[in-house]
Length: 78
Image (cartoon, rainbow, N blue to C red; front, side, top):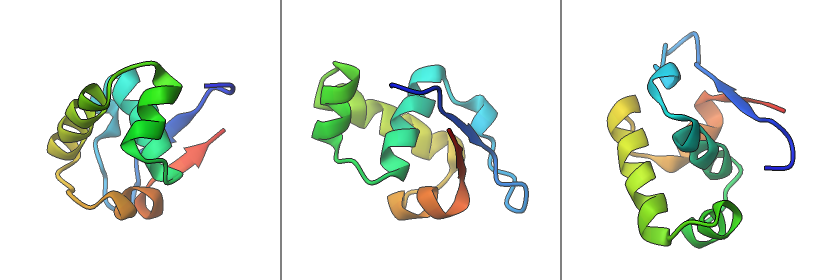
């Protein structure tokens, strides 16, 4: 990532993003701007399978299965 990015929890819905690892936060940042799994994998120099594993972990931890809601419910601070 060129710039340091941080995702804060949504105070209204109280999503526990502090439970996410640094890498999961990176993946979530890319999801929130609409990148595809392959694009995320290329940017992070990891496999698509690894990206999908991170996604499953994110969804499990945040209890939200819909990607589009991430960009609406989280604040991206650059």
